[in-house]
Length: 340
Image (tube, rainbow, N blue to C red; front, side, top):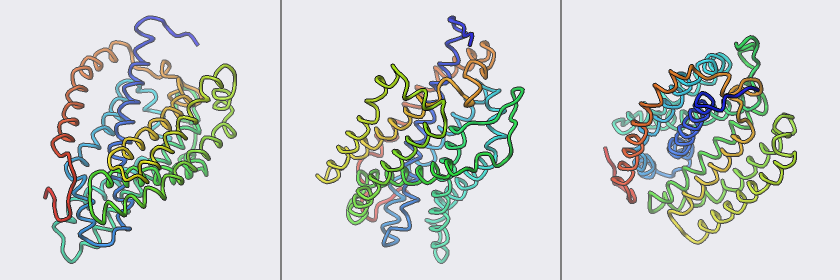
């Protein structure tokens, strides 16, 4: 693989890191409000459901901005990858977007509905759960690899629909439910917070089990991933990652047991980031596993530089706005309070 050591070689790496940041921000920020939708059917009253929804009311639509940034960044920085990924994963992308539409419409209409509120409750829960599931299917379909011939997608429309991708889909649903539960522990009080803490204690070992199964399945099913993790010297460098994950999970459990309100949320974010790092280690530098790298799919350097200039100025603005909104609406949402 002939990779330039000049700026032309570093630009695709910079853009891949920016895309990784955008996806991580989306998974964390939209993950907890999708998680609230997944937990919605377990609320005992409409008042509790109101409190759950109000805890994310100022944030949920802004959280989805990161999904747009990730997709737009892929198109402008890696157009060849975009032209391959979209045909390969077109169906789960459409299903995910439709589910997000149902979730968004339900979020807005539930508060003004009377007799039909139960239908919007169903739409909110189903849309959140299906969006999470198909995001996991997208992840699984991407990690397992995409068939490419002559720089074009060469597979079938259902190549993504495999047991491994389904497992990833269920794992993401559980993961989002976990981060949604610790968000509610941090942002609500009363019955909603107590029930969320109980849910978090149940979900934490489930999510760890899914992480373990996926971590074992990938090297067994995909030799390229086994080579990355289990050959020396990589084995010695990467061995601490699962150990740190287990240690952090133990801390999260202790914090939940001891009644902490904020620490479990940030601990679960750490678990998400560790899992995300593990996926990145498994596939980088391939943007289309297992055949095309970030350098082979990158746009011309002039295009990357042009878009990078705008991103350098806009990304701090977006991050500053996000920080300001979360600071402005800090604190708990009490029973009966809301922003509508």
